[in-house]
Length: 214
Image 1 (cartoon, rainbow, N blue to C red):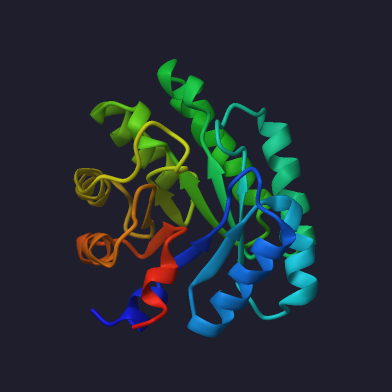
Image 2 (tube, rainbow, N blue to C red):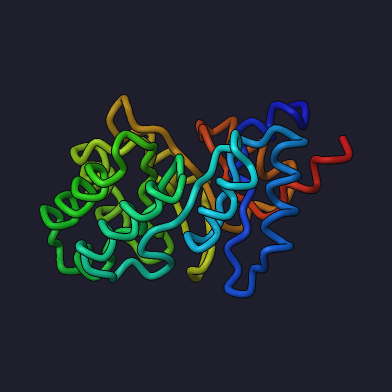
């Protein structure tokens, strides 16, 4: 697979707690130059990025990385991100609700964030490393029923990132309108190709630069 074809699927990501404006600018410059699907950056940088990169597809994170913010907080974060110029929202589910089997509440929260997105793309991070197979299947249903655009494997801040086996599970259990994003631990071109070939529409990685020289 050619590098430029992979880059079209990449959410070029910088979510470290210490990310600086200089680092975000470099990320955005690279995204424009190499044609990544988006940049995924902290909410506090969205307004700056929109002012300085008018045509760049901007993604940000909500309830990140632990997911246990209240629904009201996630909705407010989303509304603010959209107001600041975000095109895509990656939200983390409430994993405590998942463990309590409160799947109706999980669906309701995703639906509330979906509404706050005002038509922007919504990706739902379910953090697979903390889940058993039944919980993953239930979350596929939650994401589908709430009308989200993507299900996403991981924040990259958990105990483990994406796994190919989870992509296969997603494909069997999500609705036909839900796409898949893999993230976490995807560091090589071979990894990126593997996940795209498995059925991922997007790849979240901070290692897109390995493709820039090809």
